[in-house]
Length: 288
Image 1 (cartoon, one colour):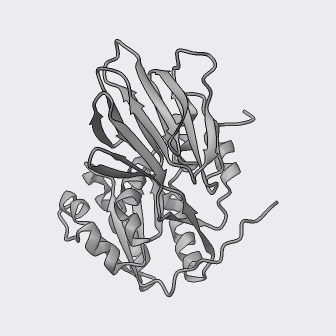
Image 2 (tube, helix red, strand yellow; image 1 turned 45 degrees about the vertical axis):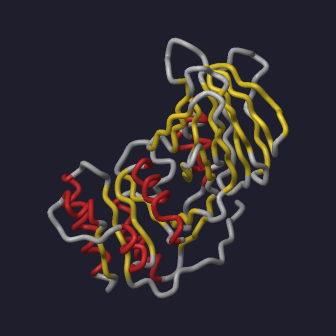
Image 3 (cartoon, one colour; image 1 turned 45 degrees about the horizontal axis):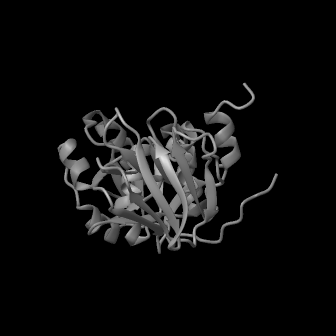
């Protein structure tokens, strides 16, 4: 089996920051267990302020946390990890996902695996993936997506028309429910559910996938991430832009959304044993 090589390592881990899934005060016991495991290995644990308020503890703003710690831990599911990555990527801190959800394409380990991971961490037995992010802008709003940017119709009673350009040159007109612009990491999210391709997460590419297109000739498109993609809303009702399923922006008729590769990457901290194709096999139940 091919072993992924990784030469990026953390220097002498002393401090970690933890962000808990919002609106989940029941995670207090989980946090205390994580804290105990790290402190037993002489690693300090700091809690993000919103998570701290949720469980009646003391915490730090995410910015303060990123300046204090060697890496971040997201405790919850993929949605929690998405939020942590998007808010912290400018600080270039690796993020480890502890999965307390169900599917968990992004979150790497469960609580039962944490003691072994901490042991491996101290022995430099782990890997750090650098994942592509995409930047978007509409009007004066700029945003970053880890999974995808979705351009969707405002009304469920009508379709939306979107004209697309690559590097300033027209290449397509989409007519249907909308368009998904996905990173390779996000290819297993909404993109997959509407028939888009799965793309290896360390690939440098955009995936553009129409949602319920009116024409049967419209197909998903994978392209190098060096291009700038522009989508102009033709529909009189305008559209909504949804970033990683978490932030929403309204777009009016004749306004454009421009999308580029971000100038920084998200750093994902993983067990050395993690194999992407085994994750696909497990989560998608291939072969069952």
